[in-house]
Image (cartoon, rainbow, N blue to C red; front, side):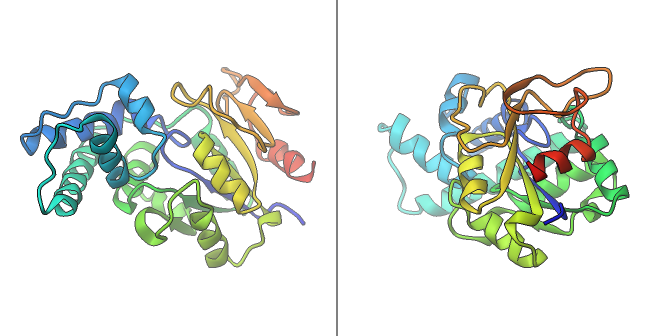
Length: 252
């Protein structure tokens, strides 16, 4: 089957949002609520093993803060913290503090010009996706994506494949017609669970993850003046990811 669509994870894949975006936004929310929780970069790397912001906060309390006495409305507190975190994060995006990763905008524009369909499949909230696209990619770029599968639209988050399966169903496509883009072990477990051939671009938090099943693992998507590095898998690109190289990867 020919390549019809590209499905993208967001955090860590489209942009390096975790270390300098979500993490300080969580800390700002904690301060706002008078909590003494503070997530430094190494701790946040450990917490990223859990997908979903609300789930991550609950895991933090259970695993790292046994001293914290959960209030009777603990679930409500977590929900309110997550809303505050999203507000802080989108304010950071509005200031242009979270740039897209190398090659992302170039590849998206090339795919659009060629009539390749685009979608997002992520555990982050729809508000976070919209904020990132509109402020870090281009105003109006949310409309570039036919489907934005995000947040709690499915109950089981990555590494469950549900978010990808939902996106494929909405687009009316088979996995064999698509390529997925991920950056983490949980992400590729989700995409491969949905039978999607997957290209991985690593980041500082995920470079040591297990990417078994990836078609290729790269440092990033690369630019003509800043080539990507192939870490594993066979890559026949020009040093940066193009639509032609993706079609070759899809056929292989």
